Amino acid sequence: MRRDSRKLSGPAWLGANFWSRTGGPLMWRSYDPRVVRDELQVLAEHGLNITRSFFYWPDFMPEPDRIDETLAERYADFLEAHAERGMRTIPTFIVGHMSGENWDPAWRQGRDLYADVWLVARQAWFAEEMTRRYTGHPAIAGWLITNEMPIYGGPAPAERVTSWAQLMVQAVHAAGAKEPVSVGDGAWGVEVTGVDNGFSVRALAELTDFVGPHVYRMEDDLVRQHHGAAFVCELAGTFGRPVVLEEFGCSSDFVADDNAAHYYRQILYNSLLAGATGWVAWNNTDFDLVDQPPYSHHPFELHFGLTTADGTPKPVLREMRDFARTLAEIDLAGCERAETDTALVVPQVLEGGFPFTDPEDRTYVFATLRQAYVSARAADLAPGVTRESDGIAGDARLYLVPSAKQLTAPGWHRLEDLARGGAVVYVSYSAGPHGGQRGPWYSHMNAMFGVEHRLTYGLVDPIEDDVVELTLTADLGALEKGTTLAFRAGGTAHSRAYLPVRPTTAEVLAVDGHGRPALLRQRCGDGWTVLCTYPLEHMAAVTPHVNPEPTHRIYDALAVLAGARRPVRVADPRVSADVLVRADGARFAVFVSQADAELAVRPLVAENDRAGGEEIVLGPYGVRVLELRT
Image 1 (tube, one colour):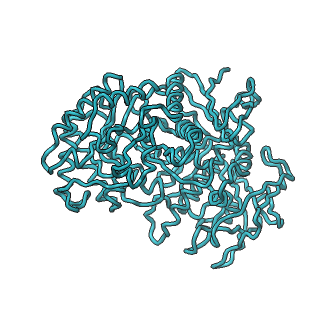
Image 2 (cartoon, helix red, strand yellow):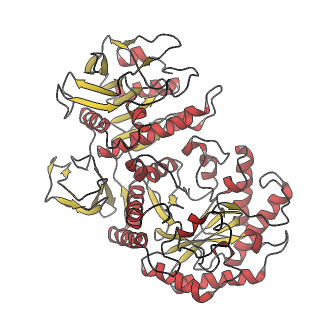
Image 3 (cartoon, rainbow, N blue to C red):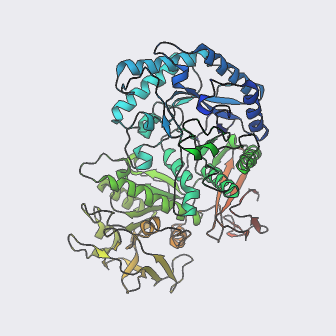
């Protein structure tokens, strides 16, 4: 299965969102060319080549038909400062939201940003005028329509938002721009998050040249946190456009400097392996603007910088520098992600659109899939993502359908056809997170899995044990008969439930602590269907501080059953491994550790499935990139 690795032309974007320390969003009023050049210089010296810059809307457009020419001249100097250092920038037009506050031009007077024809025309005029001034300048890398418009303009019907975005993108093109353009909305649409804000990632991708996730998540599990942005990039990368991780970062008020460095390292490398091909951190500098909104009321926003307020590099900037060196050494422009034999199936319900379904079904899918992604990474499966709404891809050997309450009826039959053709299809049961039509929405469960389910209408079969123990009754991959795996139980009164079944034609591979079938397989044509009667991934997804947890061992065993190739793997689940392939045939193995202490591991290389070379030592939460040689 080919994993998408689309890229924008030219060097990979690696840089920072930029506000000068002289004023933050008000920097253009107090613009200091010397300070700006100093700020850019420290970024350039650390290998950064891009900034994302902002036309603070109330200042740049003080009247509905006038642009402040003094500020426009200052922005022109800003571009020259970039060009002097071999850097480029991505201007952002409609900047009405920033760092915890919305900022209106006085003349807006409450008009709807998407639906008021006059106001939409004024936005488009502004974008076209600013584009015409600067397009073609060597320091212009691309264009962004807004900064986080879902926060500034609020949610709206998708048809209205998409129409507004189309007019804004057309305005940029009307000005003669050849540089890539995107929306700047954060890729928070339903296709990625499960929450419908009207900014459809699918629809906007049709209009734009790249997708730009903004990821700032508060989590209860460190490994999920480290893979959070990567999983978002995987979902965002399913619409035929390059993915630029347009915003990520952390405030020094929320995290110690060494832990912030670990976080940056994990986000950069895990998102690289998830298909991101550009990275723009939030943000370039700390501020000393304690009396100025938004910092006066959101003081933690003062300290998101790659440098301190006096320009001193912070550890996170050194992580960006090291990542820049890695990208240069492997020549990212010529690299793609290695093909994978494992597919993670995204149910169509994540995108909504079905009548009489609960919105919680969508967010449930996101959380469950993300946990399955973490477990697949622990097993070095390097999963690709395939959306049911686009037709489940047919070129994988192992299909993971974790804790699934519902797919469409055609989706279930498609999976059975894939198994019949030689694949292994793994499905774990879930009754769903709420009481609405609680239970499995499978089209033909009994026939597909060789069981007779024993469900009682309107009730669930609760998991009463705090720890679910599954004991193998037959060998499966590296799992030998008699092996017991222990899982912490979790979920709501609805979802903390198992599926009672009697095997008919299925073989029982594992039983729970009460002797009930827990893992079963049935031969299906040339392949297998595998049913787990416990919602393992969902239980882990709602359990704090759980990873790594034993689901990865089941995934590892299923990979063996499926003959799913892994170019390189590591026995320790705290280290994930993946491979990038360069156009000249060079292959680079990337090892990412989730351990808080130094680890020594010996990789297993697919060609001979034995330890390759010497042990690799990784520091705490460390990363190693090594060339694989025959």
